[in-house]
Image (cartoon, rainbow, N blue to C red; front, side, top):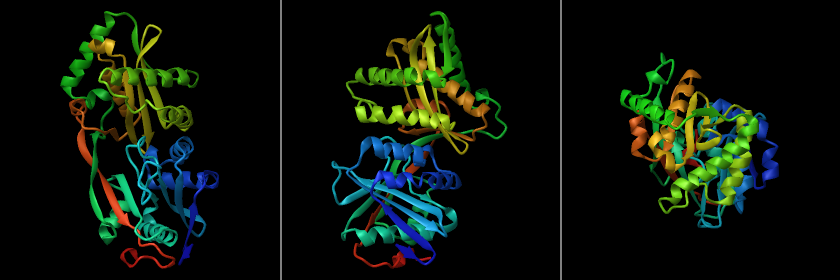
Length: 347
């Protein structure tokens, strides 16, 4: 579909979407997206989870990709509802919208969807970050059925003059880390290390095992229980590591990994995504030691913030994190065959 200077294209198959990967990477960089909006993350997510209905709208202006809206529907979802691809494994979901043309891009996506959809289809867009261009445009134009808080993430802001973790980690938590380190010394050689490429398989499999061990004690499956989720992470982690967007940190006791932290990075923000540790060693606080090391390395690398992601667990506040909401946007599609941009979103 073409409207004024914008051209849209609807992708319903993964193979056609992959041909836009390089342009998608450039758009992601311009928009300073989170790792969860990167093409590496989402293309692998689509391959791993194979949603039965895929609708990805790309928007171009003079050949340049200026917007991409990755949408899908699962068999377990109501067929009348489209969600953003990446759900269930991603803490932030969003469209990538070039801020130079944000209103026009959002308008073009909606017009494309309304051209090919039956009347009344619902866009149920959750976990939108507060700085989302989609959220800003929808709220300013009123083109939505409602905006609500979706979840809460915890953010540690790093001062500009910070040199290492010692200038960021609260004093009480620093004392706790020293106590844990002294206790660990009693057990022998306990060190925190970063995985090299040859160690990736060992670290990722240890993460699955340790995360499952921790949640099993609480009678719960945990987010890494399913084989499709494991397949996704086995594929996406090495790809992101090659692009310097991911690290796996481990805590070793002798030759054994007793804790693993999975971290992500993009555009000056470090994300503590997942971790697992052996509950048998809770006395030496392997989870806290891993997180303290991750914070220290993130500060030393010049990141401006550390995102502990969604979930208001008490331990996050002990690291000095503060709340930041994500949002849920609902938008009812009118349906039909009109090529016109909805009046509510017209520039």
